[in-house]
Length: 236
Image 1 (cartoon, rainbow, N blue to C red):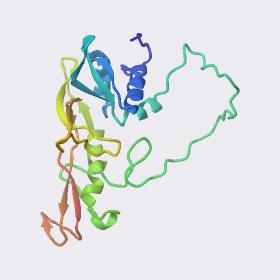
Image 2: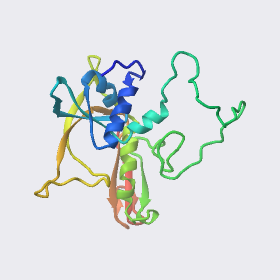
Image 3: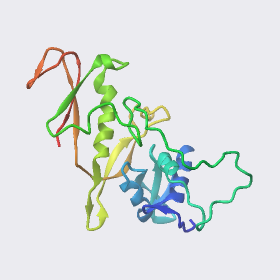
Image 4: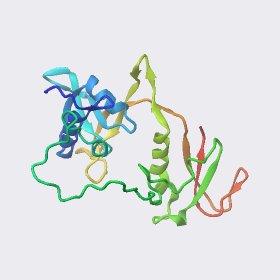
């Protein structure tokens, strides 16, 4: 593979683009630990590495696939043009360059998470031991725990950072189910889930949130649930 000089924060952007392209076709790219380590250490991780699949031509390289966050990272970090000059265009742009424009304030988009998109839930304001309640009736499927589970996980990752020891990001290998395009686990001929090994960074959680279902009328400490729903609390 040709040497790549385009990188963002130590992440080989061109290699990541190749991995994303391969993943989109159901394939993978072999990469070395030096190349994919910064991608794994990114929060959220940009690639998944299967250490059980070794490049038969190079024992230091392993099968690598992109996570769902990789494409967004590439979109947010466009490739720089060579030198300081702007990239050449084969035809004149139809868009006028505007100077002095001021972007409007970002709109709140409910339970959204990302750049300029604040969540409507008070995660940022919760102190350790603080909690908030969300009723099942607030959600389309009438299940607050399922509706907010991914939001809680995202908030935990938001305040997490990779554990670093002796200048290296500490990683661990986990076994996870391989999922299809509908995010359902793939099954083998015996109906068992097909799994793979995944290398992920060990994270230190500077804030940790937990979600639990609660029932209407029951007491949970000094709190009485006004309806069936979920209680989300900050534990760290």
